Length: 100
Image: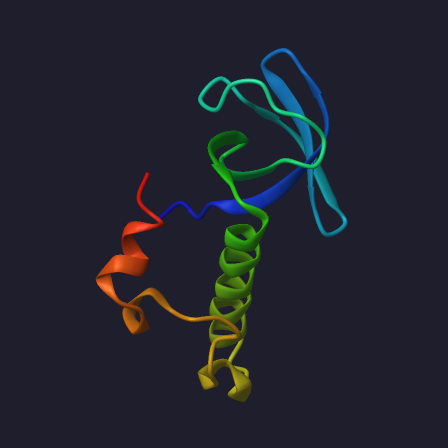
């Protein structure tokens, strides 16, 4: 299984971007998302950006991944409530806003 990580662009050049997530930095391909600028958020799989993200969506994905990491690590707090509204808890009209 491949997991996408939300990463923020800190520098860009044709076809590539330097991105960061926390202290981790790497260079990723941007052919699938087009030109990017510092400050943009990308969903990165295997060193390639696959999707542009709104900052709010990047935060939701990051929070979800933190819950998964906590659960895999056996942390008791992993079973707590998510710090955002899960797609299963919102209506169809709201879900349509996520579909592009």
